[in-house]
Structure formats: C-alpha cells, structure tokens
Length: 382
Ligand SMILES: C[S@@+](CC[C@H](N)C(=O)[O-])C[C@H]1O[C@@H](n2cnc3c(N)ncnc32)[C@H](O)[C@@H]1O
Image (cartoon, rainbow, N blue to C red; front, side, top):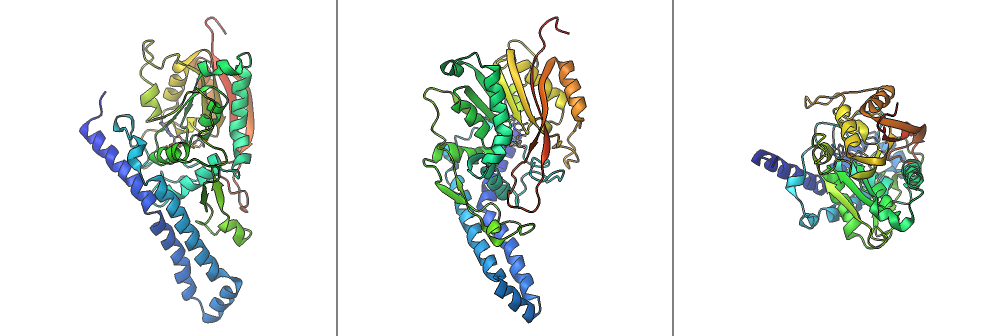
C-alpha cells in the first residue's frame, strides 16, 4: 500500500525532528550543565570556595568542552542528510511514544525524546563501534555469531555468501556487520532515524579506525568513582567498517520490521522462506504483538534455517502513552507460543549481558538475557 500524504508529511516532520535533535544536542546538554553552575552560586561563599578547591568548577568547564566536542560529532552525522538517500516510502515514524532504551533496567524512557536522542546515540556508539564496548559485544554478539557458524559448520567460508542472514532491529549495525565480515550475505533492518543516520555515517562516511572521539559519560554525574570516569573519551570506530570480504552482500534496510517482512503468510510473498538465518538481539520485546513478530520470523525463515535470539523481555510498549496495544508475555509464555507457531527451540540458556553499560560506573544493570536457537518444525515432527 503506498503511503498517504499524511504519512509522508509525518515522516518528513519526524526526519527533520531527528536532525534538529542532533543539532540541538549542545543546547540541551550545556543548559543541564549550566544548572549545576547556577546551583553553585546559591551556596554559601565558603562552600563555593571549598568546592572550587576540589576542582568542581573546573570540572563543569571541562564537561562543557566535552559537550561541544560531542556536538561537533553529532553535527557531522547530520551534516549531509541527503547523502543518506532518504527514501520516505520505506520508513515510518515510530520513534515517539514508546521506549526503546534498554540501558536502564526496568526504567521506561519514552522514545528518544529531544533531550535523549543525542545522548542515547552516543552510548549506543560505544556499544557497537568502540574498543570499550568489546566486552559487552562479546557477551551479546559473539554467542550469536558462534551459533550461526555452528549451524552452518558444513558450509565452507566462501560458500557463506549464498546464505542470507537478517538482523531485525539492527541498531547501529555492528552485529549485521560482523555477520557480513564472516562472509554471509547480511541484511540489517532498522526504523529509528537516530540509528539509521548514525550507522550510515559510521559505515559509509568513516574511513579510519579511531577517526572520532566522543565523551559519552558527561551527561550524568551520578555514581562515578572519579572525575576521569565522567570525562573519559571514547574513540570510534574500533574496526574499519569498509573492511568486508570482497563480494559479500551487506545492506541496511530502513523501515518497520512488520511492514517490510510481514505481509500475510502467502507463499508468493517476497520474504517467505527467504532467510537462512535470523538474528534477533534485544529485539523481540520491541513487539506490540509478539504473536505477529513470531509468526513473521517463522514465515520468512527458510527450511533448515535458524532463528537465533538473545535478549531480555523489557516490553517496549508496556505503559505507552500513545494508546498502542501491547502484549507482555513471560519468557515461558514466549517460548510456548514460539513452539505453537512451529519452532523447535534448542540450545536454551541464560546469559548475563549488559546494554550500553558504563563499565566504570558504581551502578550496573545486568540482564539475564534469554538465548536460544530455533528451527522450523518439520512436517510430522512431534
Ligand atoms: C534495544 S535496541 C537493540 C539494537 C541492537 N540489536 C543491539 O543489540 O544493540 C532495539 C532496536 O530495534 C529497533 N526497532 C524497534 N522496533 C522496530 C521495528 N518494528 N522495526 C524495525 N526496527 C525496530 C529500535 O529502533 C532499536 O534500534
């Protein structure tokens, strides 16, 4: 169905909101830091003096500087949005009214609001594209790529390019990139413009390892053991995104997972049975209706293919303020449902993982993420 004029208008409005959020990042963040400076002036002179001696005032200035450097980086991400090849037909406005931030356990932030879009993106960059994020990636992405390799262990490396792997909710694209790096044909799917613009910048406009420096931890002063932990720079990217094996197919498709991959279970539908593997990482809980997500995953998986899942169940639409429906199942229920839909679940385990964690913080959330691989039940199989 072609998008209506209202869809197109909303879409364009949303896209320009995202761009202005990045452009306004400095204003939002500097004024939050300025609040601290103003508060300082309300204190008795003697206290101000003591805090200055501690270096608190100098720290506030250093944070201002770090914020301007972050702003320069975010500014370059959106400097040339046309280059993005922005295709309004394929994208949807879904980034408001619901939360997709796994970085605060159980705490629901509603979307990438204007004040959070820039800061969440910086943290997400650490997770996907920095050396600092390696431990977190090794806990999440490595078990998934290992499961993929073991499912296709009889396929030689140069035959992998014939196997099509889908990564829905790809975020900043690192998992999809790692899959391509292993030689598989890899497609990420993502609908957030924050993620799409930023991954485009990293993947297509960054030509050197450690080309960028960001300061992802300057937005909150809480739970930090030292000032260095607050002001710590992080360089990106840790690998050259263009260093993929020759001839390997790697793409990121913009738009809503259900709309792109989920036309009704019609065998002539373009995605049915097309995917040799589907990797969902911190994704299935973004469903409003998990039944539909699982049904689509089942329909588009090729016979003999594998669905590899890792993630918690932080139902993104629980308590949404946009009157969207939301179904919130327990892990047991999700697995039972998956079996009813026709999956055979194997290799189940629980993995301790973090999500955009600051390793130096005095507070850390750890997810006991559910991991499994699943295949389609064969005809006649009990
Ligand atoms: C919690 S993040 C996980 C990102 C990435 N897989 C990772 O592990 O870092 C979930 C991602 O799914 C995206 N997403 C949520 N619902 C989606 C949908 N219906 N279609 C496409 N992407 C979606 C969000 O924008 C977000 O980037």
